[in-house]
Length: 601
Image (cartoon, helix red, strand yellow):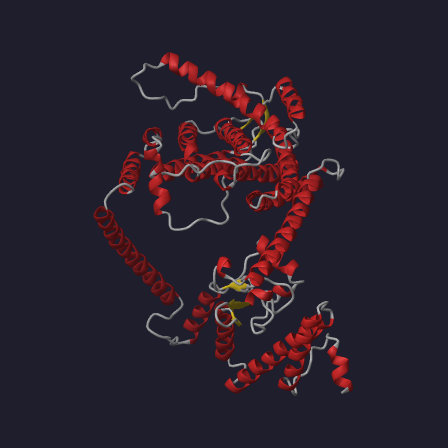
């Protein structure tokens, strides 16, 4: 690249590039993948180290560090799985194994923290934040290790893919250890434990004998995923045993023609729990089950049944029971369950997965018949349009556009009415109305004092480029050059990706259109502010071109001096000789070795 070792964005497919360019591109891609894998290994190892018990004697400090480790593990899981998939696709089984082991150990550490850590005092606040982070991590594990199982109509009409999402379909087959079956078993047990947390309000006490037997079995399998399954499986079976007993009693008391009952006939006060959920953890568990249902269709019917039964029989407040849920928290959770059931009923998957009946029945029993009928009708219409003709879809789109425009017009009218009322309250109804006397002026000042902000407004400027794994890898590969946030220094931003190369009869290098657009926007913004005149802007752009050319000249001189080939060294000397006359009057970079030679000359 023109700056450091950054990559170049090709304007033609790699298969049509010149042989030398293809080899350079493969070499850069291999170097980038190696650096990415190294960063991810450090990332997962550091997250795993934060969850090792005994780092602090204070429980609050240890819980705070562990929660940050869980958050780091949540952010590293999907990029790591994508990197492993790319390694398997490139037939690099050794590179995939080097990262797969730390990732599985990281998941095992979080699962141990969630299910095998003894419950602490709720007054310390340790388990609230820590357990909430673990539940969110369990949701990400279930989402990443499960199957999308899309319908053919949905797959053909899908416009784009989400690069942040990962499923087992993205994992190439053929690896002897990293298989789809191993990840899918983790997802099934994790989803069952999430359903148990929502239905019971905590984790059912795990049988110690079953847990020890399962962990001993995992030691003999010698598979990285066996240790995770040995913890999730007893936790899932503890809930499935209770669920099976309740369902068997319902089948004995229900006729074959009757619908499934919404009642979960179970006295939750008699169940021994390893830990009970707080309000935040409970809300995250509900959101996790609902999100998995909408993004992973195979889970929809089980999630709908779980949420509908829990909405029909929400948590109850019992004085002196020692529950971490207060009376207000129980009301909030009950309302959240109703809202989630309504949202899931409105989804077309409720019709295709046959989960709409129990959702509709649950909302009807809660006194929301009108809303449930409307939501079910919308879901059936949307599901029918997936297999309908083009004319039917166009008619539905026209109705949607008309309904959206009318709603937007109503919102605009309401916003105008609020703005006029606010202006009238500040004395600006029909222009600035000056008070007639001193008393009215004082009253107007006192009224306007209420509209003053209590604190200084913060800057609304947001980071244009989010911090992702690619952002970190670019910073490492370009030695920090991609971190330059100065929009005017277009020649240093993004390393070599600011340039593009066109291969044809003549090879041409030019700035990327996005970079030019950013430079023009920065030019227009500074011009609007009035900080520089147009002549000053031209001079600034000319000076920056000189600095960019001087930096390129220094890199050519440096590379030609260390070249092993005599032909390449002579070619670099020829370019240097020509550029030396072209850059007359241009000063070299202050940090370069040419600065002293130029001063001496």
